[in-house]
Length: 394
Image 1 (cartoon, one colour):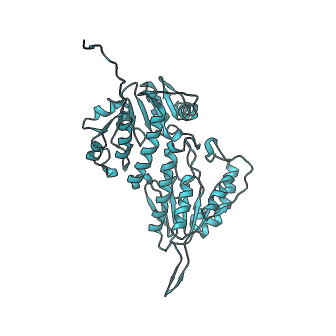
Image 2 (cartoon, helix red, strand yellow):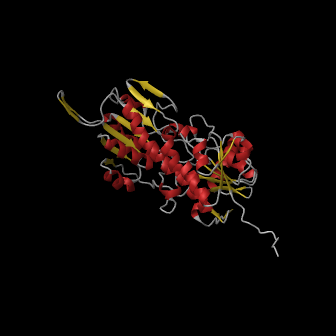
Image 3 (cartoon, rainbow, N blue to C red):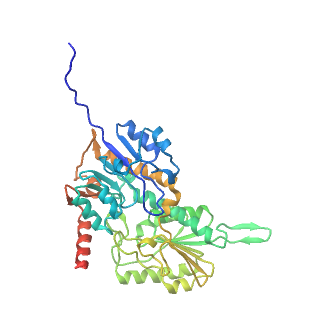
């Protein structure tokens, strides 16, 4: 006799990849190779039409990888279990999310806590990639670091294009041309990649960081480390640079002034999460630089490390060029998307089991990156940032 009983099959989790709407954002959350791997693992992947076109991935490429292409915005934003994104949400995009769904993206949680509050109110389980802990276990999920590496590389190329000199030493019939001198402020992921890139181009490189522990990393890349003895702790949780006192900032400026003055190129990378970037290169230092010198300020979007920085603009004064680039990783969208896709897909599979979210908040990766769940803000730093915002509004 034929068995007519109903067999319960496991429900397949739907993953959504949306088209980025932020100005100048060319990256996409998943590339076709990563989609193929997720489909093979049993996920259903919906991709908004045109999502990958600025990273040179066509809808046909995604279809060949096993994704379903959706032309209606609501089919992806409102029809998936987990939405994957790159740029922090715009105000209107929060309205498009389905209540009870999960979001994984950069979210700027400390600078836009009001958006995090709205996500909590919509009962969205949200993971901010900025808050992935900096540990060896979480390294493959650390999108902040992967994209910072892209920015550090590109910053040197931007500087080289603007500098009216060669980077390497050249021996020519017209004589020997000395190499350019590059001074890099901040030896985090972006700074270290900038050091490596400038060295590959043949420049003489010096680097400064308030964290003495990075000295060996700087030297291993062939750069000279500029040391400043500060009588306070300079390392925050996760190995990031910590905001220091006014006295320490002044001492730092005094120490780096001479190196800024003699450099052909200065690249600044110093940022403190959730805070305005520290001012390290003063107007006095800029006026003392040689005409033709170039500054590339990777902290431009956070207010800048340089006195003349304007986000998104190239300023030329007194013969000195100061460039404040916005979203440099986006300019290398193919590789930046490839790296980001690896980060975000690894986190996704880490968070799920048998087609369902499997959230253990005692896990430092899950507990650290999850900013909202069950209608509440989970992260204490985000709560504090929201409280400060509400206090200022009052």
